[in-house]
Image (tube, rainbow over all chains, first blue to last red; front, top):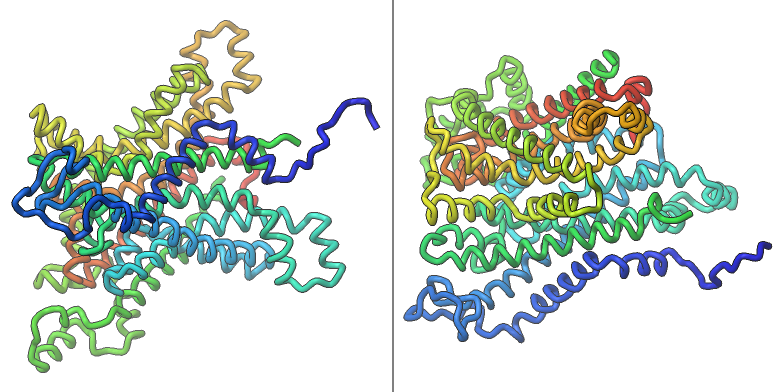
Length: 290
Length: 312
């Protein structure tokens, strides 16, 4: 129509988002750091310099050196190795618990938002009630009631983190369902489940991804917090939170036992937060061009 | 406005009721009774104990009995501290936690507001990036790491401040308050910055500038009033978070507050104590959310008129 040269490329949501994300240096740095940590944690059994249980009681706690880059703990166990293995648990908790939260939150929010009326009111009131439960206390409660096991921890953390997700998805769905293409799907006689799964959820995916990325650091923090209190991961398993807990006990004599696991956790949380912020800028329809 | 407050208040009742019910059911579905953790007790003693604490009654009777006691403010007896009841234990430990939360809140608000306002005054400059990067660190650094590091630096290496305890000395309160307050200071700084940036681009601020008012008056008098609304709305959840965070800070600094009690109760499987404290915390959090919602509403004339529109 007009003389102006519009770019001919296909601007899909993902391509557009990726362009923005790759312009955001901090977010990219976060992504790279995160991938790096994940690879190291995943490959820990193969690339760790020492065995996980390998003790060296004669050496005892030693500061960082060439043999032990991050030093050793009181049993002479290599800290680098322990941090790598601890990262496996911490990152795993982060991703699995977030997935649990994602599945519950998205289905709950989508159903409530789509159904509307009394069902919506009831479902969201339930979310309100759970919101009022101090979530930390709720998790401690769950750990006390059902015992401390890893699977339960995933579930318990996921079970408290889905609430905000449900609210976000519900809000999205409520605006989406008034749009023409959903009406069209309706008039074509598609069943509700199909409309929700095929047409509504994919259109709400941007905010879902953004919030999921920001949930991962929360979840990891929560796990570390619980492990720190002695209510999360139990030895011989290890996580960054547990390592920090041990580090605190001996920080006066051997500060590196506190500092290195602390650094690992903080850097990961940093990376996740930067990535999340970057993704929000890249995927949030409000800031995107029209 | 009053209608909004009343409706919110009425909504809080089913919420609290739900919390009590969920907690009660959870606690009572725990495998093993509260006395099974101890070494084997003779059956007749167990019977007597169960009778004493009404554990032999059907669950619904226990539930209504508990509700009845709750209404009169009685949280029941503690299983682990014989002869003392949960209400007493809460009453003796809570003031400490409240004090800690108060100091932390002061730290959070003072630092957060200052940093946020400073950043918003010159967006996208060093004056913006420096406090906001610090805020990011504050958000990413968990309290159970920050606390020990502060102790290490100021308590052990520099020997400026005591490393634990909770006596009347002001020195005892500084590190715990900073440990607990920093994360919230960071959130408040971000919220303040966002809120202030919104406000400072409004027409009435331009009018104020055109009138030749000084920057201080513009920011503090005209800007803050509107810019603070998101911060006020955050204070309720922040307070709730602080109660949770007090678990860690009280453990690190050896402060005899409710959070430490709760963690101990969790380890000891002191069911009535857990139940009572959970309900107590939940009631507090519900009230604080209520107060901060109403305050934020009252501060924002636009919301005041919209009244009860569905929040999006």
